[in-house]
Image 1 (cartoon, rainbow, N blue to C red):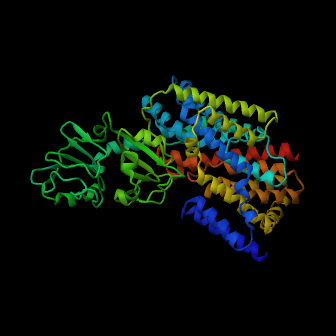
Image 2 (tube, one colour):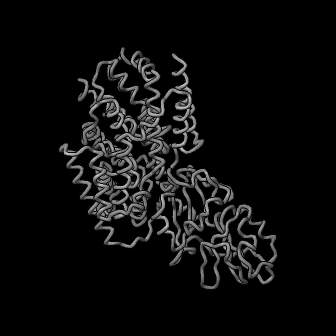
Length: 592
């Protein structure tokens, strides 16, 4: 082993530790790792930056814009809502829901699909007295499975496709992965519907749990004439920076003021509604003129009126709120909403609201004003997982149909080899902008630049693994271990390694790290490298065992009220099913 190989392995271990323990944003951790290879001379600037011009990465950027245009129209959720709307049988409804969703995720990014359907499913379950926890993990898993059907299905497929082009290979055709992915989808969905339904818990959603425990979240104080800050603003009265408490609403006669601004004035008779660590209310009880109202019948439902609503949202992976304290985010002014509570790993974060540092996947319980919906539509900071009253906009529907028809037309051109995937998606975006389906500003907002930075940086990591001989060194070890047991054992080893990396770091990083190793193994075993390209692509996408391995799993984690072990109970058997099918089909199609 050379020092370069040792250094690459050392940096890879540090990178994985950083990703596992969430020491910083994933894109920054991978980019810093790439920078270390650049500064030490392991990579030249051209090699380090090659991923930023890779066709796979750029195609993903274009797909973000296309998916954003279709998601905005609401066409996909309306079509599926019609399919499941009349059914009262849980398993029949799940079948009607998961089959089309798997189909949609074969051509659209799965994250917006899960974001769109989570509130729809919760509303549908509420109307029928069913638990959303029986449906939300299946929703995530169905989009992951559907993503293995086509080249467009997931960003991982396009990353591997881009790597293949860099290696001088032909790359995937549009439906090539479906040879393996098709059987996996059919058997995987059958397992989820017939067996997984019984394994999943019957949880209450967060909003219901909070409503039952209102006294732990809300406290009411009345303003007496003796209060020294009467007619002063909330800020000047010192009610902005309380220890453990947060003023979310003022009830004045028949008027409700929420969210409360710092300039709002306090008057005699006002009812002040606080949230946060209610156990610290004693601090306010010491203030003359503020009286704790112990006989209140206040609950979360009474806070909702024509202008105010109770909303649950999940902090997104690309959010600018990540690793910031709530008090530093200007949350109320930016989103016209106030945070009542933060839940992480299905448990309430017991700290002063303003002092909580946000992480990806945190579930926020919000009291929202009338401008919240519009501001959220223009933001990628978090995913709203409770239904909002959205007006039906005919113009958006028409634009959505234009986007869908254009996309399917381009897919047809790719299928018949008239255009390459990148050229077809570039043309689709140009048509959508010229037809005013999306504006340039909306297109820019749709692109998840942090995801692109992670993928582009990961390409450089893969180059370092290959260039230094680290990939060959690891491949030699894998071949020595697996060869006595046959090619199937080697396929299983590569699949397991890729899948483990996917569960603990990110799917794109796992694919880029394992692809060069797979190519070296193919060379040493004298088999078609396409076998290992397909294997790595599917293994890197098949994240079912943890909520942190795949973005869609994390989105439904809080809204479903799941525990970490819930993913393991239903996910481990599904992972074994998908692995068995993948190894069998790859061996059958590409090796035997």
